[in-house]
Image 1 (cartoon, rainbow, N blue to C red):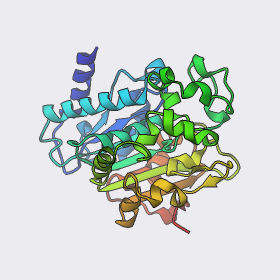
Image 2: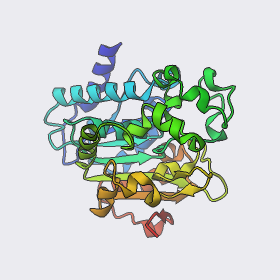
Image 3: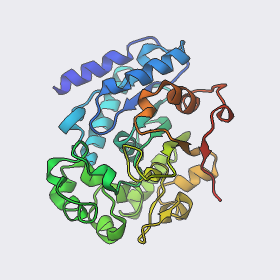
Image 4: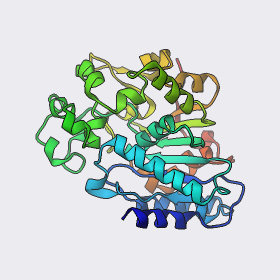
Length: 323
């Protein structure tokens, strides 16, 4: 199975190169590589000179259900090994690095992968509706999103099982669960999100992961903006996609007021101060529009992949800036 996946992924990078670095795509929970087909078709139509091999819809053991429910640390390790293999097979293709474009849960996996891999040269990272601060809300509890073991729990008590050791080592939804009313338990028991935010770990490890993240040329975090709801049909609350989240009183705290940003625990503030960070919330873009909607892809994602004449003023959106 592993050999088959390796050969399948290699087949995507055999085309002759051009001036663009490869773009590796990693999907979200419950999805499979073909869910990127509309995305790749849209990008290729807008950039005819982009060779087929430069857009890699990465196949893995974590496709669909229940594969995508595997613990996130395991997924990060596997994807890092797979990308190293692709580089080994086609070193000329990757000599100038590569871009990572990742959707939903995949975007959280990719951020951690960048932080953890000392040897991988990611140029631009584009997060499409990724729950970077985790999830908390009814929107993430429907049967189609949560494994059977967690379906009987409510928002208020889901932490009791999500933060158990067996859940943390087995289930990605448990890794993503971030109960703002049980922050101490979250920091002590969640084995994925707190380290990725630089909130726990040894000083040496946090420094290493921060330095890796700061090697990015640009980090782009995109999400849909909804004034009437916290749920954009994929992550809840949607502000998690741009590092906003609930405080202990249930009020939304923007990224600028988060301790990890103020203290620059994993490098987000440095990227902002050096002009390499984009945080953008686009009105009424639903969770799957980022990969299925031609208009959204062309006008709100494409400009961050290569230089484009498509300017944001033609297509109204919210630029998140510090107030």
